[in-house]
Length: 92
Image (cartoon, rainbow, N blue to C red; front, side):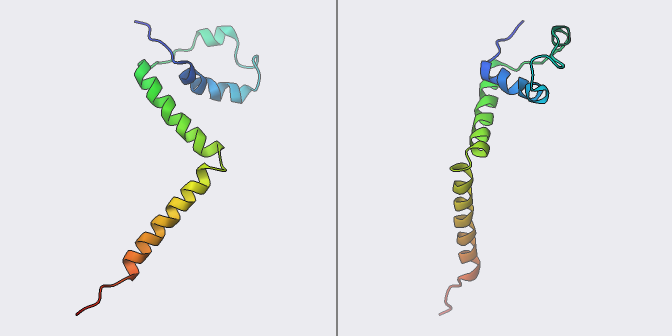
């Protein structure tokens, strides 16, 4: 039974090939493509994978938002645990 292929899933799936060749011709002969066998997960699984890859892409490509937010979060986490380690309760 043939399954549907989510367009964005295919875009992520084919990106390494396109990025490698940087062209429509080298290594992308129709005969070679027709011989490829690609196992396609269910549409729901494709959508889940695309959602994860979209979030990852947003974090790695939008450096003005993703990285500074992550650094601020880790700084707060560091300060929280540092306080927990260095602040002692008074003994009565």
